[in-house]
Amino acid sequence: MSARPQIEPPYLLFLGDAKDALAAKTARGVFVFRPEWCLGQLRLPGCNARLDLPEMTVEEAAGGGAKSLIVGVANAGGVLPDSWIDTLVAALDAGLDVASGLHVRLSDLPPVREAAEAKGRLLFDARHPPQDFAVGSGTRRPGKRLLTVGTDASVGKMYATLALEAEWRRRDVACTFRATGQTGIFVAGEGVSVDAVVADFISGATEWLAPANDPEHWDLIEGQGSLFHPSYAGVTLGLIHGAQPDAIVVCHEPTRTHMRGLPAWPLPELGACIEANLQAARLTNPDVVCAGLCINTEALGEAEAQALLAELGKAHGLPCVDPIRTGVGPIADRLL
Image (tube, rainbow, N blue to C red; front, side, top):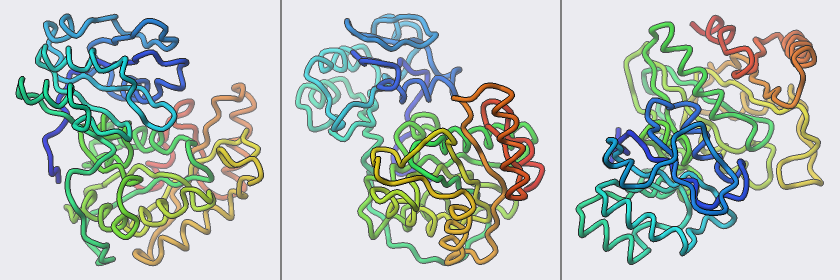
């Protein structure tokens, strides 16, 4: 599937001068789901985020076996500050590859590009696909595919998909996590950041990402955006059509009062979200089903969370879980 080399672990996670934990969410996501790939963290003065990893310089990380430095910080505008460049150059000089999910391309930064060329190291721009894609065909293809969708952006679709992958593997079910965002790409080592694909080619890129496979193999595809979010619905729809899912899992954060970044837009009712996503998915797979609900209950106490999961599961007649709090076993039971 890959059109470029995979990002090679172990990783040194670069937290830069992140102002808070949220700014370092990329690094945190990698650490949560691939802790065995994470050798250490590198933080600059003023960094207010940290992980439960040893502090390391690039030289210490290289000496300890690290293969890649991951820029684990997301900031406004996706820019890479000048104050980070010396660290990236030092990592390349020490023999590490460098990977970033920011909008700016590493190869557009002359000191970084020149250091990589001089040392024969690789630069990975996870947000920028390295190849062109065809338009989607909608042709049915063998293999099974599950896509996570959501009532809003940033409600836990990546976490839900990776939890499903872990459950599938625990049950010895052949599966592959298909990453569609930069954090997911660092977790998987490969993938396509679909929000950087030209609109006409999003469904085709998704078909390429999750191609024909063995009939019993599951591609577990990370969702993006929401059909109900005015900013991101286009990305979501292209992903749905290209994924051609046999099953969707709907993700929701119950304490939100409006769509992320849009105070005037309320969240959709959960039943309406389920039906809208099924209706969209029927274009390329008329047999699609909703396999369950993944509810992010992080902001709720244990009793309140359990009561809400039971209530929503009963109301919609579906397995209803929190991937972190309860695991996703009931969804796997329904599908497998």
